[in-house]
Length: 365
Image 1 (cartoon, rainbow, N blue to C red):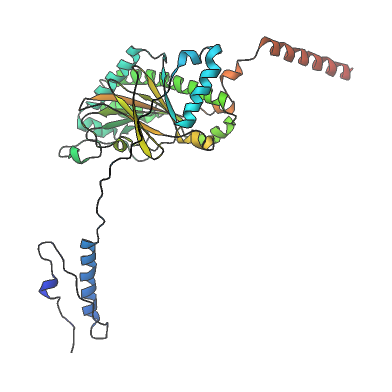
Image 2 (tube, rainbow, N blue to C red; image 1 turned 180 degrees about the vertical axis):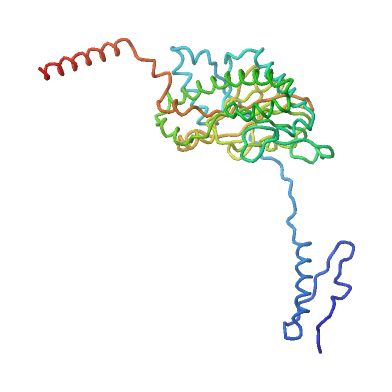
């Protein structure tokens, strides 16, 4: 009896979006190959609609609250307290991978000016933002643009906008100028000035790490690479968030990060496979160790991710400066050590050079 041209029975066809399990395919014979193919298609369609892995919304693992060490940069700049403060600072980087700094020297006026210009950037119309969208392999621009009809509640982070700033990319200046000619000058000046201040803080912290760890800084230079430069990431937060993980949106390799926050906020860090939270002191900067430092120290320094949050639906601006030093700085253990040569040492070096010169003169005669 031939099976050729046989259609699947009605009970196997779709009923209200559900599928019944099809019967075993008949043995593929010379006359039944077509029937076997039809049943295989039904089986594939059935498996596609039924074998779906359920989505599990598990709670974020949280570590109990811990106090975050705070260090006064004025004491670091003092010769009497520099060594003791530096040791405690590096110990915090080893244990939890972050700390906060006070008395950092950045004025409130400079900070507020950078925040104001960042807010104006995020308030641009959608059509102008789309002119500065971050392209593939680009290091500047908007990370995501809200378009009409987006369901913001279903996104990982309800209303977070992100803008990357690369001071070393000349094309960024042209792109922002074309999209925002009336505000480009003020934005560029405020962000450049604030980035320079954050970079100074980051270089001071890295210098302390050089001084207190017996590691070769030249290896850090090799890890950085030729195209690895510092970046500034601007965040605009508004509305409730689902989880701390939703605020982490970059994987840029960096040495360390300097985090700026405003208003009554908390700070989350991801460490030891879980999130821990702590409150911040007024007018502080949070320093987190980057993945390059972790590799450079052979895992001694702990690399962590961090983000600022604020209670309720309050809108606020935060910034993260992802610091990678210029390659010429990494040739030495410390920039500060280059100028910390005592007068006695200088005198001894001078005497040795004079003696060598006299010896060379005698040999020539």
